[in-house]
Image 1 (cartoon, rainbow, N blue to C red):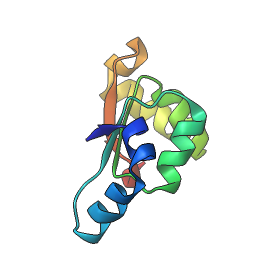
Image 2: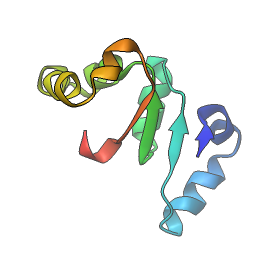
Image 3: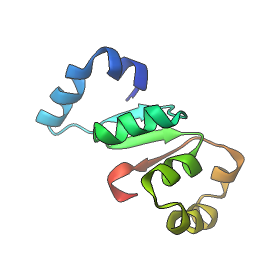
Length: 88
């Protein structure tokens, strides 16, 4: 559970986590370049203030917009939230 800058400085930590079955989380990722990096690294969880942007990058904004509006109304107010990236 680190800021994405820590993982950038220590990429070996992610490899270690994957090898040992540990769950990775990155926060607070609000820039599209950093979101794409996290997706490529197969980070398990991502915390963002921009779930709309994250879903748009994944090409699922139309499907998931309803989910976030129905289940997570705080997302519309810009509250950081985590979702397992493999489920999105």
